[in-house]
Length: 428
Image (cartoon, rainbow, N blue to C red; front, side, top):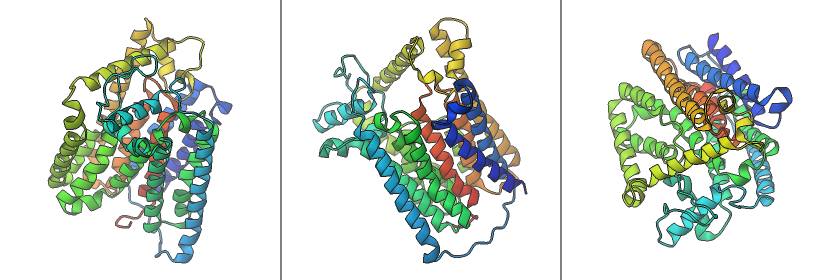
């Protein structure tokens, strides 16, 4: 059946995606070719999921899991967590938090220290020898407040959030009555991906907090996998839960923003009460977490931060003769830098326009396909997850500074998608 073919291709491409983001990538092809292949594979992975959402799933015999079935999975989970802790601790022990290496974590530290001292976190930062306007939304830096309060390494917060997300994915896989091969895959793959990244990339965990973002999007994927339950239950209670996980992504790294209208349209068509309840709770959350405590004091603070981000990106594009994320094999921005005519600002503007256009086009194509075929929808969670993966392929593929660490989110999101591929409807 076509469903089984789509699923097999998705899993195959997922392993290839993990491989190409790890240290193996440049052994087989050049950096530019690596970026193009990654873009094509991510696009096809999203397309496979959307196509499979309208196919009948093969009947797979499953039985209630016994303790005998689960103990090997629990052992693998414990071993995986232990190995992840070992690899993470090994990396951060040799990489200091230093703004001369990366100002991501130092910026988060300054913002939380200001909050702890009763100061305005979004004031201009001048501690690093240059002026920096904070660009981070509240849930990008507020989760690290306990680290500032109790004086421990902020990076453990990011790891803990990712680990919780990974364990939630694994737990749901164990509850969903998956086949034995699927249980092994869902249990082992998050840790395998983590170890490959730590072994094969340079300071990805030591200099960034993208593990936290990956964790947030994995948790959001779990909610999309449960969308049928939310559609059938109490609208206000379920709307509050959905809004919570929406806010984790929306107020940290809002990569899915252009895709959200499609998700909203589908939920509106399925259950208008749930849409309205989720919208209300989300609006209240934005007011309470961002607008009232921070944005009202300086309404232009975030725009200033975005302007700084654009200036920093242009500076990165203008560098000559130094290692650059533009040529790390993750995105096509380097092609624009080399091939587009004009000064560097025009070249940067070109990739920014293309990112917007192709991202919107991806959402539009997904929406058109859904609208035309919605009457024969078989697996709504799989369509929502697939359309987001399809959108991510272009959003991240054309991002203006394709740092390796940014690719953690779409790849770990793909791992969480496995549940929707293997779980029988109505289980888990």
